[in-house]
Image (cartoon, rainbow, N blue to C red; front, side, top):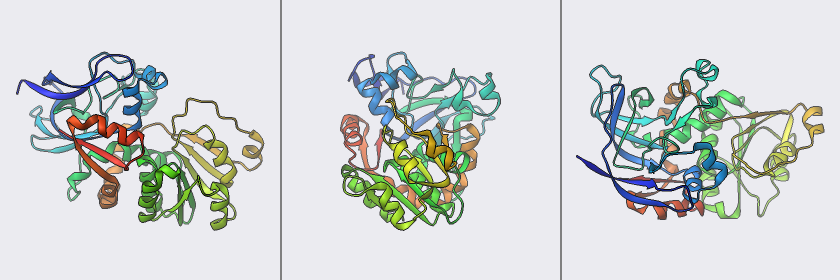
Length: 347
């Protein structure tokens, strides 16, 4: 076991992504060697593939960089006294804070200025093997379907938003702007939190995702054919009590303010790098709360594991395609073209 196949970014320019042979990484004390079982694809991976500066500048990686921050694997090597054992299947928290700044000391490494990220500026999971810190490995609770492990990273993003940042109350009407995997996981969590109605909006190109959302209990809104605000108010005249913005559309925040109820809350997850104009008057006079939600914290991973066990069968319905590692470009194109929900690569 001297070399492995990996999908790596080779230079800071569009494209420059190849399936290459690299040495199998060697672990150090406190680290775990994993045999990768599956890895997901995120919009961030598409941005790094195209080398979109707004995203790429966030990471400033060295090259070659193995992509992929959503992955799970089987433990091959670990310390004798590790909290995981050889043969365990674990999900990986790809975030590594500095551990010393005020944000890390407060338990909020997502806000760490020196934060590192596997697949962004540390080697990721689009490879046959990966080395990760032991503390970043999470075993599923007993009785959880192990197939769900590669989905835990995006699910934890959604959990942080719904269960830690902007929490719906039982009986609330919730709306999700954006029908991607994060939006669909928010749908599942909002339903589990007791929301009475959950709307999920998307474009005409999201037709398949909107059908999936409807099958998971949402009221779908195709914004190419329906007015978002009017549709919500047909069912809930006062508006949605909670709205989550996941689309990164510059017009989405304005849409959310128009559609939220008095005293309602808006959670913002979408990474929009364009200007968005908001009128402050309705925000003030209707006491609307707008809250940002970035990634997750380490404690979020421990908190969400019971929810994964409860929702795993529905979570797995998001997996629409599984491709081989060497088919990474096909997979990236499918994500960019909104064909399918969650696409997995398997070495």
